Length: 335
Figure (cartoon, helix red, strand yellow):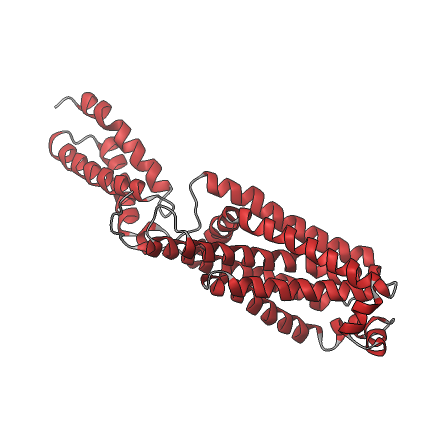
């Protein structure tokens, strides 16, 4: 056998196998099949070369390639820290980015409605009278009133934990109950928008709109964004029930359901950050500009995380779904 001809004929397959091995764990279904095929071929090539052309350098190269290919094909376990890193570096930002056409409009509409409610309540005493008696409104909005003291009603640590649990429950409601045609999501969004509009309207009517913003913005920018992301994802899940597209409803819901799980895990961490800010920064003695600045920085970092890192991950083929080896096989579909 002419060794040079053999190497020239199969060098491309060996190089391609090396590329696929480097991306093991992030391969699409067709690429995973290609990995298995090339691994088997290379193992055959190695066996042939050992028997007819025992070139030490080439054998060492192919032996290492086959060993790494075997690990990739058999799915050797990855360290937990690596899986966590991949989740936050690729899967979570990718799944948030892929849903932006749902959560960005949700955010715009909700904030616009909250702004209209704020203006309507602030300008109409009759509307405020239907919300609460004047004495109660005074107690809420006066300096040192309930709106201001709410954020310092208890130890910062326990308050942050309480806020985190509450916000995580709201996000989970939006995510998992979206399957009910999105109706619970709309209800949760309206409740959130109404509370924001009432608080803003009452404080603005008392001439303390700036205080209200100083209390809401440090934690609220990221917190509201997380809620809108959850709501948009829940609405997308609800729409998948109505219109699964060219896939079967079961397959479409399975894919979107896995995306919801990824979103839930990631947003739990995001809301932990907002809880810490609400518990320790919002009621702190820092100047208003500093507290709001912290909120703006954190919000900007999250949006950059999604629209830069998330878009980059999507362009390399990341969908936020489980790796192919965990999803299982699916029956072929028509269309």
